[in-house]
Amino acid sequence: MALPVDDPGGLSLVRSASGGDRAAFGELYRMYARMVHGILLARVPPGEAEDLLQEVFLTAMSRLPALREQAAFGGWLASIARSKALDYLRSRRETAELPEQIASGAPPAETRLEAVRVLALIRTLPEAYRETLVLRLVEGLTGPEIAEHTGLQPDSVRVNLARGMKLLRQKLEGESRP
Image (cartoon, rainbow, N blue to C red; front, side, top):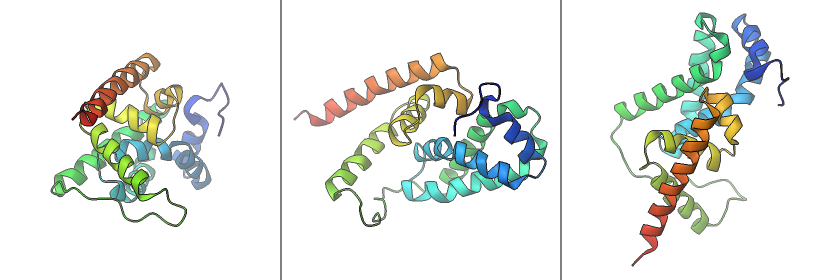
């Protein structure tokens, strides 16, 4: 959804949703779900990200009327996502698991395994790089979209993406050496 220039981050939707407008909240979900999913995917197993995505938005819906700075909705939502991921990690021991079989039309097993391997490497990077890389590479958000949705400065996103990609390339090259 393209937002009007005079309504960055969907402030009018945030105001409406804060007043109980479920359709407005549905639009906010549509706008921010990829960002939240990417934040979760950078931290938790892929199979858990979907469930936590729903938890994040349920929490946000219940707490939205108490949000003081409605223009900070994206950053606030990102904070809830990070908190839910942290709660999940605290409550469970780390396990290595492969994602469940994807429905028909899924990429070949080799491609899925490669994606799991790259995601595992991304998860070894510093948090700032990990999150922006997943939002860019997995969720398909652009740098400006990442900045707008998370509340980060565009220059910070650019730097995090550049440095994160450099570290990821080094790790990938290091794995391919005999």
